[in-house]
Image (cartoon, rainbow over all chains, first blue to last red; front, side, top):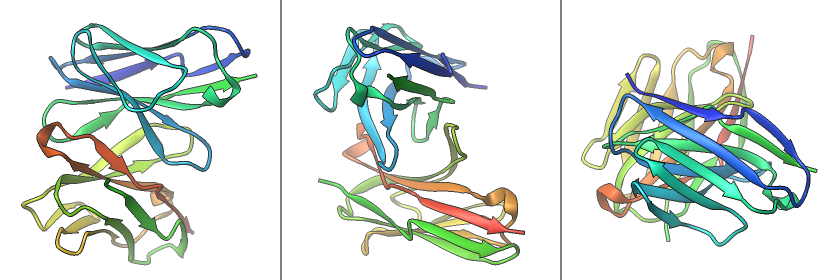
Length: 110
Length: 113
């Protein structure tokens, strides 16, 4: 069966510090991978998606970037965090029809 | 541009009641529609997926329907239980098989014992 992992589960970072969030999927090959952000009182916002290794599509301009160095690994990064980057970050994968989500990372920028 | 709306934003019911959560979308050319459940501080759990050619899907006490022509989907929960308390989100996929999900903001359900 397939599983999706995200780490860390929670993170508190000061403004201006770098960020690296990791997502890995097990039990499937060549999935579509997604990064979402969920801010308080707002819906799920799609940040990036990838249909293959090294291929990244950005949905909104922002302070973040994404990379897919391996088939089942998806990384969300920032060089300098802003207060507005705080939120709940969710990774997801899809192979055919149904989309599945990871447990999320709660990021607080102070 | 696809927009997904969920009404009501919050709902409180007594245990045992049957209830309906509503989801509407502006562009009827969807590929499929997916319902999720989210518990506080957790990721999303997929509940039901309805393909555009289907009218409904059932899983246990849950039944989801899809009416593309009217741009609506409903999630029916039978005999609600306190464990059903969570936020329920619907998401529509457009743009063919490679399209991305567009989410509603969810309905927060509270089932009182």
